[in-house]
Image 1 (tube, rainbow, N blue to C red):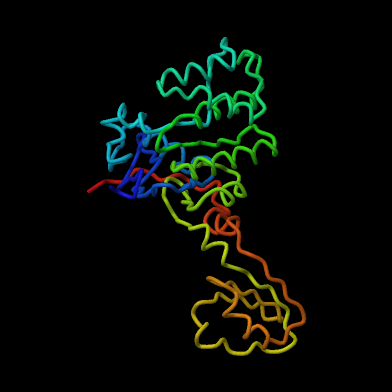
Image 2 (tube, rainbow, N blue to C red):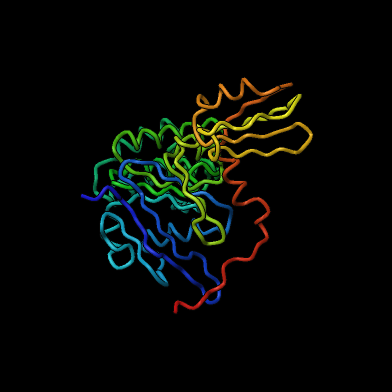
Length: 306
């Protein structure tokens, strides 16, 4: 059995001269929380819609549990529970009836589970959807989606329109789903949520996948800001080439480590330090590296496949 729940190969989607996604290769491993990160227009939602079989690829393929997402979309939907970024629910139904409807559609007898999730999200299920706030409708959709007993959850901006306390509750529910053996694709603009929840993250920029980040590796990396009172000694041979060092020429330096701090501490103690600050490299720094200043750059224009 493949260790991948979902994968894409050369996945490309074009709209005339505009390429929304180009040559995207991803592998979503069984039992992980896989993050999609990027600004509006980066290709996240296009990728999700291709995985759901809502769009026909221009080139390449997307597969979920070894089923072609477009040609076998009906089968694929049996394995997936999807929360879209623009949730639309039946406005005349009461919340309880919405949960009953989605439970009956899947014929999974998971209605009691959806009620329990709604209770944890502090939902009033007697109110009609038309009279629910945007946040309440979002919570109702989350309860319906997470209740489904499926292999893959695809969550597009699941915490949008929620207050900070409920956002934390949703992240915990996502983790519980992972502990129960399910795989989650998690798209969000909130970097702190992605860093907290996800095992791996891919960054998309203007329709291209530009970076894959393992979060556990990111947590081992640090930046050291120091002011020196004298010249900096030579970097030891065992560290040379593994550090990124910036020196402004006035005694202020920045050292970026690729991993654990321990191998660096002995050399740091030899530096003529006036002051030093050590901080972890968060996902924000990685995101800024690929996206800072790119908000107004043009999207990819279609090119010949030849």
